[in-house]
Image (tube, rainbow, N blue to C red; front, side):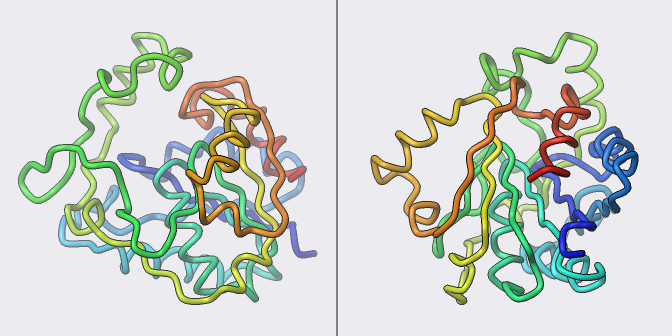
Length: 227
């Protein structure tokens, strides 16, 4: 079946272990979940590029039986969208959690300081408020300790898209620290031009901060398996 396999792509500073609890819940439902190990995020390859990461996601899509559901989180919503652009015939659906489909020519990630050829986690100040409200002090310490600096060539890369068949793919937008109503307002105001061109978009609310895989894994897994 097209939706039996789910490919998961984590955002900035996350290694594959961030999805562990979600994967366990997905597998309870009888589905298969594959977490993409992104070059440069957990393997020590500070020279990795965004093309390397896109290639890793595309390889995971190609290796999955049928047409998998492709899930991106945060900045990696852009990464998942690039992989969907590269393989529109191989993906059944794209689910974007806490982020948006990047447009051709966009910067891949927000601009945080670069140190020694990589972009380390900048601390919690940029994420105070709704982003991190559901993370207690201990959870923040665990996140900071596990955070992997993102290679500069990934962080500063430019998004490239070539195949307009991506707009035919169904997209599910999972809204964590903002509401579906807010997302509609941004889209209708022209702030999300790439999303505005997608033909079929569903908006799903989840009551969490920016990292629901850490704080609401069971709920996120239910959304992904029913999307």
